[in-house]
Image (cartoon, rainbow, N blue to C red):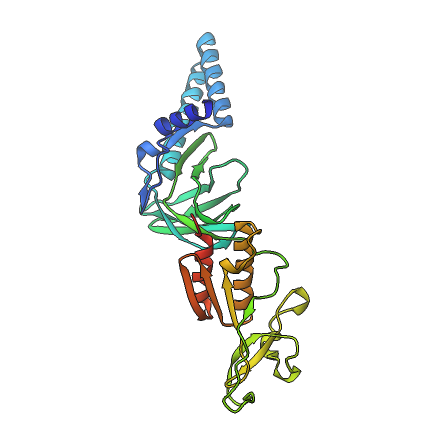
Length: 323
């Protein structure tokens, strides 16, 4: 109840509403100003000086008090101008695996002639680091903000806070922004996953012997394959001691087998998330070794292929399964 009331108050006072798409302008109503801790001490000092000058009728005391008060007013103007009317925009996001940190790109655009100094930008939640940036007149800067992930699917970017204590540190000027941006989170690959699922039967030529003249690709190594047929160039790119898969050259007219990563073929006793993690591990292993593989998951049925586009399509289907 208390948290709900606090959220309502923040929406009313600080205008923290729904996500905003496109470019956002920090107008006057979205920039808030309050004294910092040194600022409160400065205000207290001004009050003491004013009371002292009044009690003892000190002309120089009044003059010093008013000079310091005018400095505070000038500080307020420059502090507010440092953040007000700044344009914000969200850039592209990068897909990651669950447990990794997403990388959100944000652009800070200054379409005014004056420079802006020491603007601290970061996730509004407590404990997240912030980065200070300076923005020249008629220019822009880009920042990479990271945020941890816990589960697969679409993850929305959290609220971003911009704040500055420029120029004298007596005032804290801040605003918040919630971009309408999401990052795709793939399932976390299973550690020590079983070998790739190799299916199919041997296919011989019409003459009853295997052909070894026309190279047709590579496949997962099977027990009994001749050592001279190992694809050493592909094997050299992986570390078999860390679980890398041996691969064998496949020739036209020779034996062949298919790699089919099928959700329905996994044991029923496995948890759904574990199945998705295992399939993710297999997709990454097959792609790393340059193998052809088919993929079946619900309505997603991809024919045997290889390459980044095929890999990303499979990982996307895994990330969004039943969501």
